[in-house]
Image (cartoon, rainbow, N blue to C red):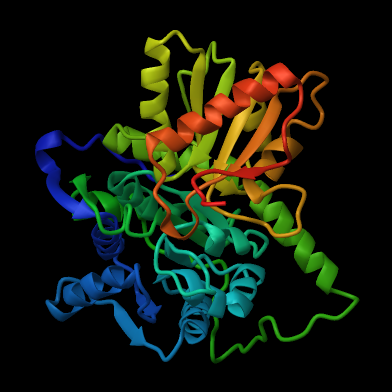
Length: 401
């Protein structure tokens, strides 16, 4: 762990930035060696802004303009293998086109930072936000972190390199923001001096890099004698992520005064019903809770930041005292018992003798607005299901029947 110092407020620069712009600036300050990407709405601004930094001589990064997202992740794997600090960005169908190489990057233990502006998957074509793209990649072996604000997107991008490059982890990581809702909205962002970030991250120390004089083969074939052992090593590495995440964030907090945690509790101490979600709907849920609290309703919010690995113990501890947990998620898992976030929550509660009721609400698909009234509707339905002693496996809110 590097030794960092508290950065005085007068050394920080404050600007209004979109989520995309905040990520681009963070990538610049992380002084990455290679960025390979293909443009896709709504992440395009990340790469556009970064290429301006390169054109202006503000960073010496090698930008590789590839012909597809599959090629983008392939180039990132190659660059990471020789010891480079590497990043890329994508969304929706772009992430889907990377699919094969996502698994390669994780299995080959490449600490690549992939920033994603979450967007719905086709068909029909839709450019707006839900979480079906990254939720679909939840078993790829990537760490997944979800952000609520532009400030958090900036901070998380910086921390992502330090988490991924840790010698006990060496796994790729996704930093996710809601497309358009956060990627294109301007918010106040407090930025760190370049030197502070350089000291925080340190020099990239590759665990093993390719050497032409000592050639090795990486990832081509592992049949029955070896494949299972590779997967076991991957699993052990991702289990270590929570501890490393806490260490990295503690160091970042000493430097900035800011921290987020794997999850955030908001007025949950005495809550009988807890609203559980992540990304921008969590901000809406907090406003709803503030209003409901004025009416003496015992309700709180659990805002998840880390989805992979899923912080099961921490989630169970945060919600076990509640009568019910209302899950709000922007994804649908067709043919499943319920949907991805609710499945994780239910599994987290499995060993408890007494557990809260879990209600699962699908919201906001394809960028459908999620106003406070939608959150209130889910809350009121959960209250009613508590009285009945039974809830549907899942249901949709805000959709025309």
